[in-house]
Image (tube, rainbow, N blue to C red):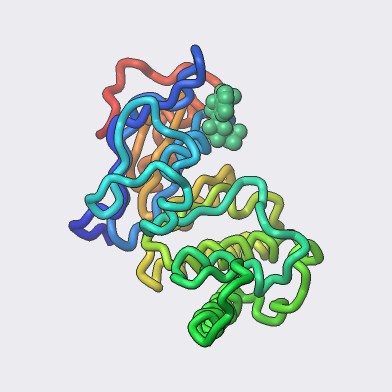
Amino acid sequence: MTGSTAVLDARGVTKRFGGLTAVRDVDFTVGEGEIVGLIGPNGAGKTTFFNCLTGLYEPTAGEVRYRGRRLPSRPHDVTRAGVARTFQNIRLFPNMTVLENVMVGRHCRLREGLLSAIGRGPRYRRAEAEAEGTARELLEFAGIGRLAGSLARNLPYGDQRRLEIARALASDPGLLLLDEPTAGMNPQETERTRELVLAIRDRGLAVVVIEHDMRFIFGLCDRVAVLNQGEKLVEGPPSDVQSDERVIAAYIGGAPDDDEPEEA
Ligand SMILES: Nc1ncnc2c1ncn2[C@@H]1O[C@H](COP(=O)(O)OP(=O)(O)OP(=O)(O)O)[C@@H](O)[C@H]1O
């Protein structure tokens, strides 16, 4: 599954908030077409690490490369470079339609500003038609095509999460970062999300998923990395990680076995 090119290569990423080191010296790579899980107890630093990958936070130390090139420091530029994400707390435009939400996600790929009120000439209309076509295709892909005209705020929770994913895909990324995509979902919705992530990989993307639902993570991912107190504790195939005593200890609140060397 892992290709030779690293899609994402994060080295020595550290993020400090004053005296608190939320992420400490984390190395993390994602290969072509891989689905990698990022797990860890509450407060382990997972979202902070995501934020360091997507330009929301500037790492205190370390560097992040996407397909060999150092990622820019601002979120919009990171999206343009090819890294898209969803958020733990859904961030949609609630009073825009489902279709419009996805078209906004397409915005960074268009030379013509969709939100600009000026210059609505033929080039603008062509760009808008292209954005709409792409958005409709992505809504179908995400299984919510029938909801294109609904206001985002009227969607059931599970569909809002799917819309967030469709919007992220609209920026045409090579890497998608999903922060708790199944939070609050029932088992059927969770299963549909698993199928959607697999279909996203089939489109040629690499995916990183933060999730608390272990069954989801271990059933979906090619590889899983575990963060604990800001550090990478273990990384490997789901079957290894699942049975690793250090991981079990971290989750039940015990001290991990410090004598065990960490895997690279
Ligand atoms: N902006 C911030 N300022 C100060 N401390 C922060 C900030 N963001 C996160 N932290 C702290 O960094 C640590 C890691 O938090 P983070 O949210 O990254 O963990 P997490 O693994 O995503 O947790 P959860 O699973 O509960 O979402 C926590 O101690 C948190 O309180």
